[in-house]
Length: 176
Image 1: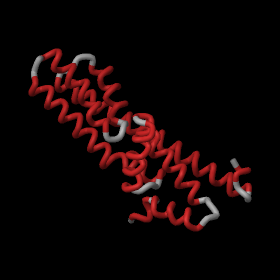
Image 2 (image 1 turned 30 degrees about the vertical axis):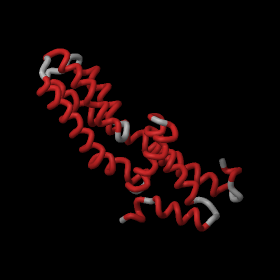
Image 3 (image 1 turned 180 degrees about the vertical axis):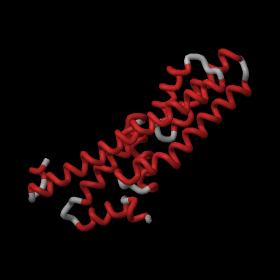
């Protein structure tokens, strides 16, 4: 990677930043999964969802998907509950609880865990999710933040002033 830059040390430092940011994103998502899994188990136990551990694992994974995760994480458990109890009210309550969990995690927990390491502001994150999601679908949604972080780091380490300026606009520190 250092061969891409005129100064080899700058290439090595850029690579370290990319590795740190990418690692922070994936470890942060792992921490989020470890936090949300027991919450889903408790909620599913309260609502008497069948196969709570399996359904909680699936809901936890789907909860990590931006935007569509709220819909998907609650849909399958609500359908499973409806199939077992035939209670539309209970299914809707469970679905609502899953959506609340998703939004609490997405709006309050995720920025605290991932925000300081990835260093991308909310506007850039939203634009990245829409653009990468449109380009690559579900995989684009999952990889949007690390790819955008990679682009921002490359812009920061560039020799071009205008790319550094764009990186500053993308930064969470610039928004404060």
